[in-house]
Length: 176
Image (cartoon, rainbow, N blue to C red):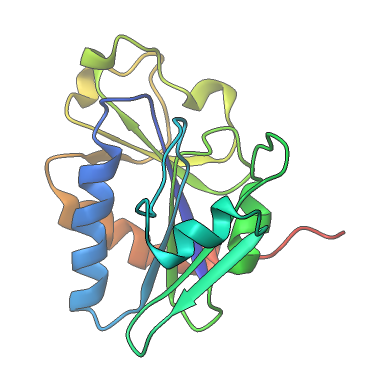
């Protein structure tokens, strides 16, 4: 499988771009998974449902499956920051692409999503894993870069870059 991360600060447009790229990859007949980092407390379950009740009773994991959907919920016993490589190991190995949103400090190849409106500096000068930058204002990138600069408003251009560079994005799990 091929893996590419999308790194950037909140409000830069990562989620919108990932949505567009999922659609584009699907139009090419490719199977896509997403690994998303959530900074805030969130819950995909609903109070009162069986799986919620099982978690409330103390289950470490609850796996709910139907003939159309599988959901695995794991309740960490202590606060734990998930590691991206552990999460990628959970992904079905029959996918063509995994798009990773967040995990901006990871050692995965990444596309930085940058808008000056975020008020944040670019990540790429300090991060050797950033392979390209997607932005709506290429002339405002400082310092200038030799990395590919892609138009954030043209997701098909970013998709084309991904497909053209797919051989460099084949996932190799780290050695234990």
